[in-house]
Length: 153
Image (cartoon, rainbow, N blue to C red):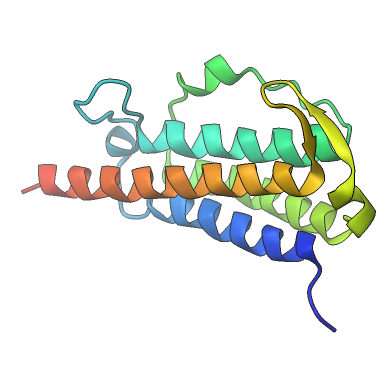
């Protein structure tokens, strides 16, 4: 049986967040919380927390109609105590995301939803934006980890 459109989005979305979470491997708590010396750059901890919150909001609040209580501004103040702590948060959210998206129907993908920052969007647009957002931050995470490892030299 072929994959549904929502399942394809699910795989890509999860893969990109996994990439961010995996960027924490081998780093100390100080390193995961260190911000590059570039205006508006974020630490790996912030990138992970912010991306997970964005996924949660888009999947559960926008598509699922379940308020998640996201406070976006707080995400940029996040400091993780360890890579394991952040990975644990993602593993719990990841399973819920995959399970929810397995149940998304073609009708849900075609339906319009009200998005607080984007206005009226189709279900597939919600998942496209969330996936693109995660991919953007996955790139940031890779560059940030490269910078952190270079600081060790």
